[in-house]
Length: 344
Image 1 (tube, one colour):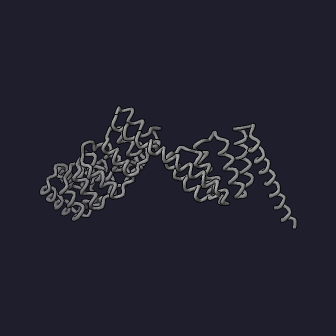
Image 2: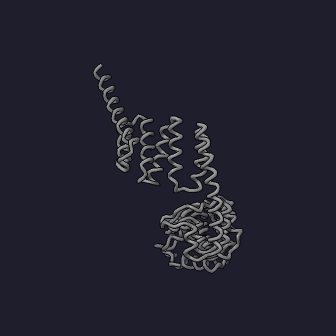
Image 3: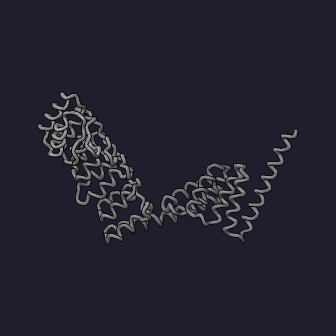
């Protein structure tokens, strides 16, 4: 713990305060608080060089009684952040003081507060809680912790799989953690568990992926059946279900874009087509979908540009060539119509 910084004469008292918090010495801590208050210092404004306040220090030490005093009587912000963006709840979990973490959660700590690296309490729990109580993990989720939050280390599931934490992997999977999310480091939960030779985690993830693949195929089929019946809203529903199983599947975005086009919803068709191109920038059909959406929105110039991009990816495509020429013609007619209005 870095020494507290203060320009006041009570600097030594600040050191005593933080030391008492780190030792969990409640009587001594209260005594130091009284001294500092007499010096005119507000406890909420006292931080060390790392931006930690007394609540961070007490939580990191597992000093639950001091935490209770600071939260209930001193009224310190339970979600205050230090220089790294960590909250007292983060500090308690990182220090593996699970009883303190549970106290903070049960008294209003935000389970989704994120550090400067976007790590949440679930990320830290996945990193630290290997043999810790399942109560903390379940309480985090019950309190609304986002199981698919993405940080620099990926999602909590990626982190748990990397640590070989099979209990945490199972809890996350049971609470709809996504197994196919690709993190910033281009890894998935399954790859993380393979890299660390966690056989139990590999088995759990493979079992879930198998179930997801079965559901994906079923949802895709139902989407196709709805589309063939011209039930485009129904098709969108099932294609969305399929996409949730495989979020790298550009075809589902393409299919949804086509459905929205058939429903004359140009904006939504464009949104799905743009997502499709992001997933597969080398796929000509994605550009056809986007061009069709732009035609519906009567943005013929942009439509022509997009059709041309797709055509260049597949120079033999008569469909894209015709679409490009139709967009050019539509733009000419639009300009001609505008000039005639001006002349009149």
